[in-house]
Image (tube, rainbow, N blue to C red; front, side, top):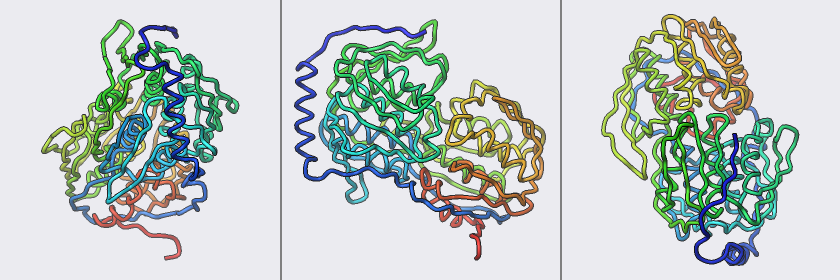
Length: 484
């Protein structure tokens, strides 16, 4: 059920006056230096790689900054007044494309002395872009940015690479239409999408039909420039980074339990104030060296400063139930998020049944979890995986196909996967379908398999983990490139 609700008062200057002032300031800032926005992945060439059985992996590392936090820090920094300084930003292609899109919309986004500086234009201050906004491979980036633009009086066209253009956007465009935004898209709501922002946006109350932090975030970001209160109701908990970071930048965000689920309400048209952000290490990236250390005998690994937000730690919980030796030290808080250091030792894993309720807290980690399950003793059954069908690839099908290519027995359903573990034979070539997590997962598998595993393309790994290969090699991983 979708409910439209108009409430609250508009504070300060009238919307049109405030937005016009922002538009004039931004236009003056960018008039002489228009910047076309090009995807950094558009011209990447396939880069196959083979992973071979390795000796013990040992070391002390910090994986790249969290991608979810990095996107949001750039976006909210652009919507805030003043200068936001970001430390530890993930410099992967997905996040860099978001930065380029924000520059095209009028923000000043620059890297200086190892830190990222964002000079914002305030809520409602987007400038009309002079080129198509290309988000490359990033579903998070494009969905959040469409939400932010939906209640601003500009028209923008969003696109992405071949993989992103196959992914559904209707789930975001439907609630954005309730604010008054108008969208033209390909069949099924797919990119490219031309979005005409609402001139006189209204607040909404929207019940999420599927558990999706991206949709929730898009609605909350759209609600920033709508008068009154905008509310999202979710039946299942999803990542709450947007709510936490909105509060960090000075927005009023309320959470309450209702009969229909958790209601998250934002008060519209705040003046967000620039705030420093230190991006924690990404638990989704930490998952790859972590599982490698569990699977390769004799391994010991320490990963510093990993985000421990409870909406993101489902994989750690599941692996511990499977028998993983994972310890957490030095828990602390930074920029509104809990972080800690992970200590991992190689472990003998056992198969378990994994309930669907935990899926939202580890939806990106199922590829590497499936690899861990292939080495575990017994059967691991994973359910509630329908969302994997609409990721960078049909991720569920890609996982199953890759496991079969490596000699693993399994059963596959529409939203479930059962993996019969044991010793992975390996020896196969895995099609990654332009999916960075599939590529990294099967490279990890090859480090512990009986025979080498080759993935057909690692070029997309740069979207989230640019230094994945050299970091793993430093720990002792063995990779081989073709013709070497």
